[in-house]
Length: 98
Image: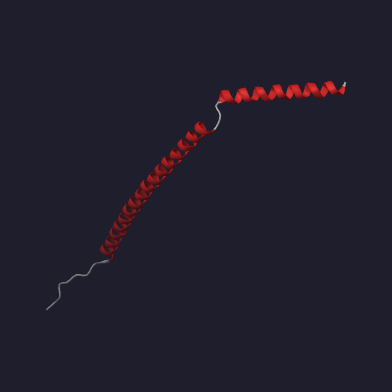
């Protein structure tokens, strides 16, 4: 009795190997694309959280500036007072030199 089992030839084996490699490459590409997408989503979420945190800090600083420091008008008034005093001091020192 003859055995009618036919083994794969070189051509069929090469076709199988190429198909297998293409399938493996497709699976790897899908895996890395998915992982890349997840990383991008996590980075965006982390960036949004950082922006929110910085926004809160800036708001706190604005509140502190408004409540603990002088206004612009008060600053200009103070500046004028200092200029007036300096001019008086300069006048007195020049008066004494002559």
